[in-house]
Length: 306
Image (tube, rainbow, N blue to C red):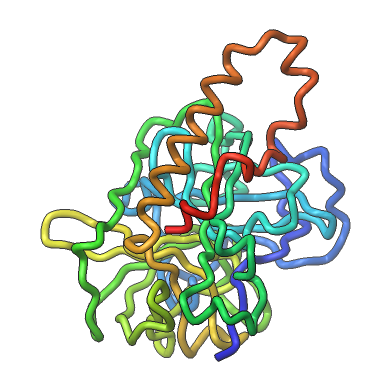
């Protein structure tokens, strides 16, 4: 099965924090006039008042080709869970955007990332399509740390635990800021949601959902897949890839449950690293590497793979 990562290049998505970037190339732009029945591919747009939307954010990065878009979820007041391939190109700047429409985001709803960490399995060989390690899953997960807290009305997600069992046919909810048309790659920048069902497992750590009626698509990378456990929405998956460019066959999600220990350990280490930086003097702060380019790989060992 050939996987197509869901990251999206969006060279002309300029706004506030990234306003100093050159945005002269022609590329897909968010369309505020998109119809609600033609979204995420065949999903619906949502506003900030929806329960799931209160935990979902956009990630916009500056890379050598321009700007790139991904989706993520808040797991605490300073950390976003997303896909590892969203930060593969060592972005020069990475910002977290709060709100249902990226272009309408106020400066007060934008936070600059200060560090990120990719799962060790992805750093080893997850991005290699034919890697033998893919039989165990690619580990397409990353955590992004930011400062400034979360705006009013937003709240961290509840992550699924290993006790959660996903069976074929289970109904799931997915959200993302990606395109509403995979071929034209248009309509990105608006938060949308859709419902579909679990099909099967692609590997012990990856789950396939049905994309024939509606699916995640490019720009939805790192976005959440939720299940209602009867009491609340619980995030069990992170959007990783699709099986065709039309985004109308199937999508692959990395299982949160199987990487929960790595998520929690890395979350703590990112937060501890931020606390240490807050005690720096101006001289030591100026001497260390640019904050948003810190991978924190030195803090993560292979023992934290899952």
